[in-house]
Length: 132
Image 1 (tube, one colour):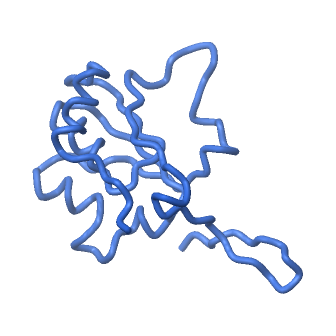
Image 2 (cartoon, one colour):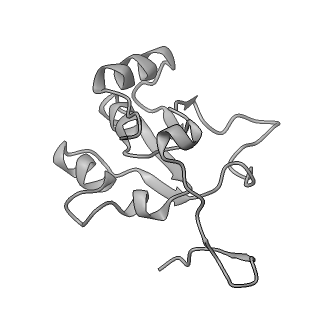
């Protein structure tokens, strides 16, 4: 089955509820296809997204990826970072807000096709996927 992807209407509603507007700094910690960030950018926000899966961030090819979707609408590309948000908390600050809005459609585990990023060696040790 295909993972659930928020429709354009749902992304619009979510960014509206988060009060994303021109000049906002919007963050999607589980960026996936980038539909939420695209809607935030259409509202005039600067966008930042992370995902654990480098393949998702790269897309299928240079013409089918998150950045190409932004280019299609003449929008500035989002800042994208590969990150495992379950263990990496550096893009959050406790004493001062960093983002105007955090809008996301979190992963739902196996039902949504979740994967671990990395591979196992013969000794059972997990090694990370190398950045190129």
